[in-house]
Image (cartoon, rainbow, N blue to C red; front, top):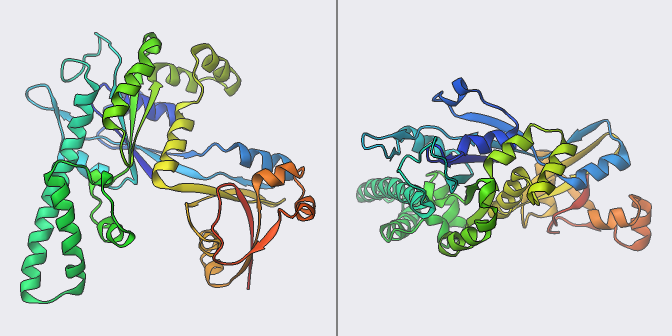
Length: 361
């Protein structure tokens, strides 16, 4: 899973990237035109507990890739210019985090001259909608010309879906807010439409704004938090300082500033929810591992994530939920005695936190 971090110049975009990835960029790196990538282990206290119980030879966390998306430039008027390079860099991401500046700093002026979160959010939304509309209109025109020559079944299926998209985009609505069937989403996947990507809007405050944070978040959430769009907040400068500290000192720092959850934990939790993801575990003395799957996947589909052969050769899944496993003192035999350990067939829908062992031929 790849999440792109976007934001206007001086919004704190690269600060957030450095905070959550612990990849600290010098001034030279920050001015490069290439995107910055980092793979981050997903924190999971459940996996840590399993490791304590089994002391395995190997521990494998689920991972997520963050990308500090580059390509935005200042136009001649001083305002931000959304370049083709930037829009192209955005397309490859599964979801987006838009960093929006709410802090004041006279030494680092906002590119548009003032702090206005809704204006900044709308700037990205408008650009993404216009980019999608241009692509959709060109594809519709090509399909219609194609169908005049030959009756292509794939093109016939695509056309009404694209026309549905065009109608939504013409009304200035991002596609992420629309209702699409599973088949429609499959058809649209190849287009990598920007306004269809789940969006986390991360409001960047400084420590002097603690008293007004809740009010500001509520105000923006009421206007912008919709289907597949979620509002979160963070203190960019403080979080960056914390990321450079040992975990024990960072916890003290968080308590002093009333920060209940780190930026990394917040983003991963909300990204998982937006993308419809969850984790299950395989455990033992050789290895404890967290696996990421789509919510609603069956045991057979989850087996295929572990190894492609397991899907075809699936027989049964041994399943116990993490909470029941811990309640039983980390003992499989006791979970069997309590009736929480069970055998499930291929249609069983995996739950977040299930510990699974696959039986296969």
